[in-house]
Image (cartoon, rainbow, N blue to C red):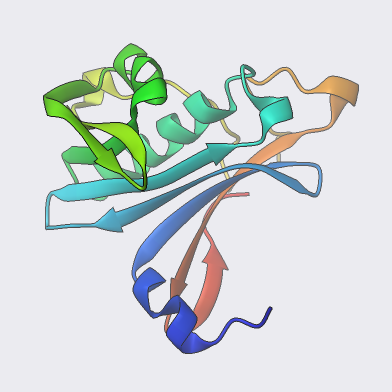
Length: 161
């Protein structure tokens, strides 16, 4: 499969956060800026073998802090119904009735961000020489990195390692 610019045209301006375990991507989330204060969490996935190890929670913590630090105060998402408890535990609220999207039941969920309600997550400071610190229990002592990657007109770039 080849990817061309037209294949990625809808992705322009979106932000992707990726969690790495060694050289393997184990989780990712895609955000889209909707307005000057609102971001939509479009897609989120964690590999099956890394579910239940706080990878998703760490991703939410990272992108919430990024949103807050960049002036976005509202996160919206169309959460699959089976994932709604995950988001509720992280302070998201449900608005409206259940609906079907891509053939699955979903709920509209949102979170108004404040300094006090950001999900706590730990990554190393990209400017420090310290080894990464993570709430994820990584087997074999391999470090886990969280990286944000955005695709703009000049290609992809990394914000966190």
